[in-house]
Length: 96
Image 1 (cartoon, rainbow, N blue to C red):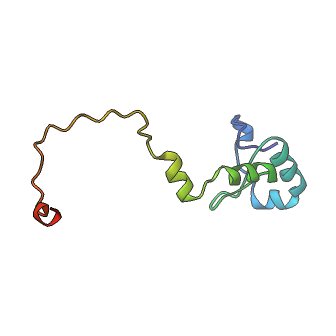
Image 2: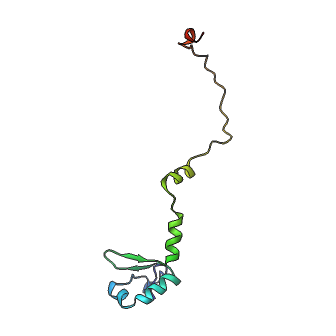
Image 3: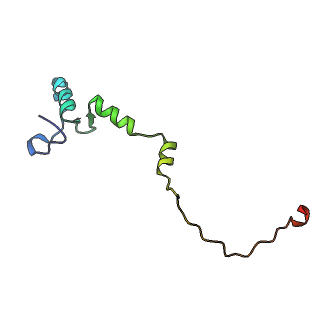
């Protein structure tokens, strides 16, 4: 059996394209039961179960939601009292 999670010496090779074509039902069964199956050597692809694909799709948040979720919160932040002298208001005469 071929499986990318099985790192024993005799089973760590990816499926060749010819093997995968000849044994497609086995590749699909192993993807469902044991995990992702790598096909090809020069430009490999991975076959995963629909369940794994859907789990990965739901984990991805739109960029805006991701940014909001990852923004540091400042709840309970204590700001120091200002030590600067009051600034002069250039429009003070117009407001009076």
